[in-house]
Image (cartoon, rainbow, N blue to C red):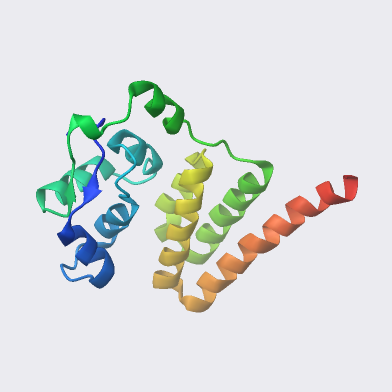
Length: 171
């Protein structure tokens, strides 16, 4: 697969996103949803760095007819790629949310949450963290229940308020 190409959803891919007609797996569907027809494969894979074997999933979607990789004519110039690949570093607020999420996952899921907690510890970009926090909520809901998932999500908001409030007092 050429990473300079821009993947685009096919009719089959759009039907899967809208109706789940082909019942692709959760991870595959998540990747399929991210395919926007504008983002080069290299940038898409950088955003999916937290996900194991994202490149294989992208290839499976291509082979299954859910996405079309287009051609090199649709790829942006190399200098444009370099600016898009840069990930936004974590702010103090996002580092606090990452730590809260890690602690909550360990407490709520126990040893079953170790992999997710490790991904949170190593997550170092805003884009990847936001996607990972959503994944955490889904896993917590599936394993610990909807109420715990809601506690997790509202706790993330409380962390944001507590880390932002001191800065407002100074200003």
